[in-house]
Length: 306
Ligand SMILES: [Zn+2]
Image 1 (cartoon, rainbow, N blue to C red):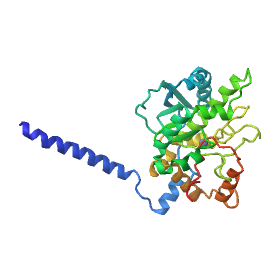
Image 2: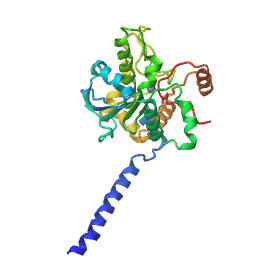
Image 3: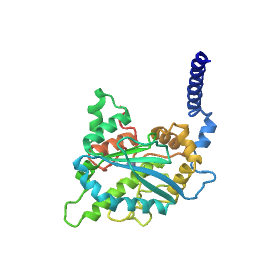
């Protein structure tokens, strides 16, 4: 009997891997143009389940002494993040992150890492799979950034040090303001992990940079250091619930293997969305060279394709 167990076990293992490789292949089945157009149309999201959704979020704070202030301020930061999402029907449950991530999954188990700048760069290189010859170039891209949200990995990496340098007020008594700004950054980055793109991505989509009152910045805009609370529009709530409830938006992301760049390309194509500026890419580059507008993270526009 004993010698039969070896081959049987090997077969079981082989079938197991065969099953998963086939299952993986169905994830990005190419769609006929008409089906693709219907899937990526945002005009009709179909039935959206608005029941409250619960997300688990691991928070990992680097053990480096530079992150001590971050550890101290987090109790004043996290409840703001929770309050924001509670208004949208999303309940965030925090757990203490270990140095290595637990089992993560898009739209259900997420992780936020608050890091030194060096740690942030190292983890960003790894997450974007930037090989050594391209790292210098990547450093240039990172110059004015302090966070990246990786949708396929369900992780947000934040350079707390960089954000502190970029935004924090050193005036005595401004601690609550700094807490608010860090909360805004986390609110924004978690928005990416719920499938949202930037408010300034398109000029003719239903997501404005400022709400109709003219002063409340949308949470997916670049106005994170806003003294007034961030806001959101109903359309974003629908997108989030459709994503978290495994509705149409989740199917869209599933179709592109959770790649945000591909996702943007397809929703642009099938919704007639336009990027800002007469020549979008040249326009964006010109603005960036002047040092404005300020960006905190990857703006999802493919700016390293030349
Ligand atoms: Zn962003």
